[in-house]
Length: 271
Length: 271
DNA sequence: AACGCTGTTCCGCTTAAGAGAACATACCAC
DNA sequence: GTGGTATGTTCTCTTAAGCGGAACAGCGTT
Image 1 (cartoon, rainbow over the protein chains, first blue to last red):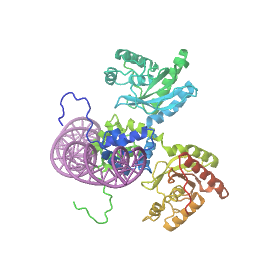
Image 2 (spheres, rainbow over the protein chains, first blue to last red; image 1 turned 30 degrees about the vertical axis):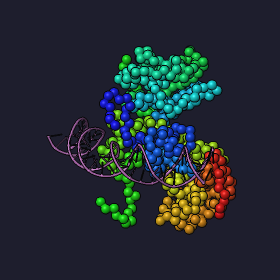
Image 3 (tube, chains in turn blue, red, yellow, brown; image 1 turned 180 degrees about the vertical axis):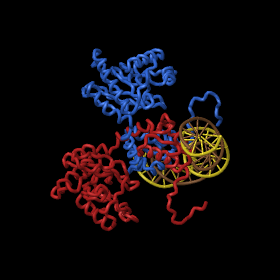
Image 4 (tube, rainbow over the protein chains, first blue to last red; image 1 turned 60 degrees about the vertical axis):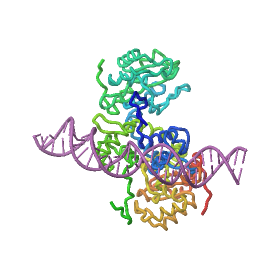
């Protein structure tokens, strides 16, 4: 097997990486709708041999992180549930945002969401939401990583990232269009983000979900960096343009409260 | 290095076990009250060298499971929070027990709890509770593994384990006395468990917490095995003996409902 | 300047992680 | 019954990744 020194594509995952494999298994188990899993089924998802998967499962079972079903299959174990439950109870941002989110949902009458930013992968996800009581409403998809370049929820974060990081994202090889309304032109996106910084909030229509409108404002952490954002989302048709200022103020206030609660500081404007 | 064949105590942890180490790190981070952690601090907790801890932290960071703070320390990462949150949302037993717990708390007026059983370690923990609105109430300590031999919450589970497993626990070298009221005599415990099976519920006074009284009934899984229990706890002084039957019925009903919801079957009595 | 602390990197040794084949068992079709 | 094909499990062997220890690079204090 000669390792071609040429422009090799694949990032070459480490040939041995039990840690990553183990968490892949847990991720698959947690994310899938299935209740139990077979050895070879998991092995193929991980692209490893059945024996490797088997040993991994054994190791995880010893730790209590996965458990066996009566029919010799595998499922998520109690120790992982314990850890997971304990972790969710102390997620600082989520805790800090709980009250502001409730207040925002009540004040605006629309679905309020909390987005969290992951600096490592330059992505965001919706961590919590308080749903509006309108019979017609968008249901926010929680706990899935999403790109920053589409939608107000991404823009409110993206606009306040360090210029270097921001540039890296906006000038990516290709800004994937999620919908027809997604901004895919780097310059246009940069201009849009400048507006976001100027106004203190982001607003978008149908960039991520056709027909959905969102308003979002950034939440900052202890060192002035963005850690996430708070916003509202509603069907486009329900939005009253004369109410934009009111809604935006509510969103910005909620985000500012969360920033304070999480012990964060809003950075100075550097336009 | 001669491996003494004698009665060696330590279970000899594998010299290399990155998986276990990694989860120890996450456990420590999640369970501790601290916000961030240093390399050597974690290394000493794990009894590994600083370099090992450092590499583990790096690997975990690559996976997004931990993140770095601004002051070069480490904290729990977003990917773990995401996984944790997704996991808690689909814990079958907790979901199944939610409504019965609420109903039980309302009907009894006392704190209702859900205990889950871990077959691997023969332990239980309180996974959820709905607190009573009495100003005086015991606050259940959640998400900590506890032994089965003390308290109604343990007994309701222990009494319905397979005889072999039960015997293994009741006849342990030493039944640790949690309080003065903890049953530490195997025969006495066995007799008590027989009563639990006969009545369908367990009741205890101060076996785990002095002055606390609890009533609990088992929840069974799809194959007739105990998966946990549901019960109530209250200050001893508030308990009205003439109400025992009423409360017990409420508890048993809640547990039976949860059993049904989780797709479980109540096994036949084999006295 | 000398210390103590921090996170980090380097280097050899060792061993467990990994693939692949063989095994045991169960089910289903013929 | 027999062949086929699933399943989980257990081998064996090679290789590289995990590990500790020592050395390094920054800080802040003494």
